[in-house]
Every structure is written in C-alpha cells, then in structure tokens.
Image (cartoon, rainbow, N blue to C red; front, top):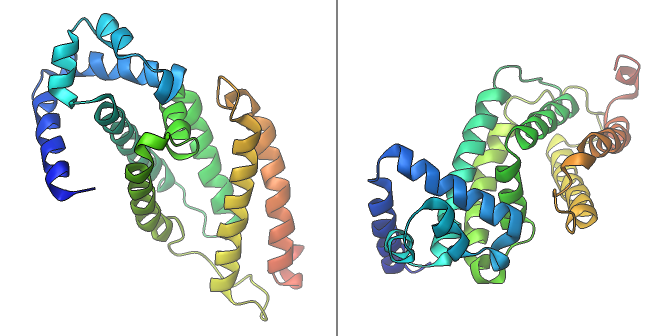
Length: 227
C-alpha cells in the first residue's frame, strides 16, 4: 500500500478511535455481524448505519470507504484473536510437535465457537479474499505468518525424530501438509452459511488421523510405542 494512502487511512481511523468506547463498540458489533453474515460484496452500509444509528456521512467520515471499513474490522478481529490465542497457548504448551498442533487446533476451535462472527470474518478475509482487498489482505497474512510461526514452533522437542530425518525439513513438510489440509477443508465448507462451525468436531478427528500418519512416518520407531 502506498505510504501516503496508508497515513491518510490511519488518520481516518483516528477519528473513529476517539469515540466513546460504548459507541465505538456498537458500530464495530454491527459491522462484524453484517460482514460475517453477508460477506464483503453483499454487506450493506445502509444496513450498518440503520442498525448502528448513525448517518452514512458519519460512517464514511470515520472510514472513507467500505473497503477501509472492512480492513479496519479485519484488523480488529485479528488483534483480538491473536491476543486470545497467544494467551491460551502459553498456559499449557506441549513440547511434542504433534501434541502442540492438536493443542493449538483445539484452542482455535474454542475461539471459533466463542466468537462465531469473528471466525467468519477471518474465513472471508483470508480464505475467501474479496478481489478489492486482495493486496492488503495478503500483506496482513504474510506479516501474521512471519510473526506467528516462530512463536508456535518455539522450543519444539525434536529428539523423537528418526535419526535420518532432518528436523527442519520435517517441520517444513508438516507446514506444507497442514496448509494443504486447510485448503481441503476450506473448499469443503466455503459455501456453508456457518463457515463449517458445525463440522469442526468431525474435521478435528480427521485432522488427528492425518497427523498420526505424518507422526509415525517421522518419529523414531523405538519411540512410537510410547505414544
């Protein structure tokens, strides 16, 4: 994004940020529901202003455009979800690679159930990215991945890997495999109104089966019986 454009958008957001918390929360909640339920293209700013009790002029005074409004909501959601994830993640962080992946998946599952609108926003933004915001969302996704992966894989116990397997290559293979699995599940749920929330328990169980295949292909044979 052009730096001058970025600065002007941040200035617009600062007008909104200066609002009383109660009024700001009401507008955010209305926007969350509208985008989550209707997606980016079908979301209506007319519906937003009606439910929030503000004029269209005020809404665009705060955000400038529907695109800026959506990106603000995405940033708001990502901050809350990431902060919640890191807080829960560090409470009980398994050192075993595969136990940790399951641990993280269950945290994300609980977060999705607790915050269905926020979950839907992340799917719309990062998995069903609207063409109009593709560049901005890609920047955010790249930054999120570069910051979160090292934290998620910190202090992993690599002692269980077979001696002829390089841990770094195993981690790279695992990341690629999980990405492919994620794409498979996204394809399966992308047309569902609930974005797959009701399918999560089934998906997690299947996810574990795939992880076990990878796990027993990577770990030392003498340790498999201990799992």
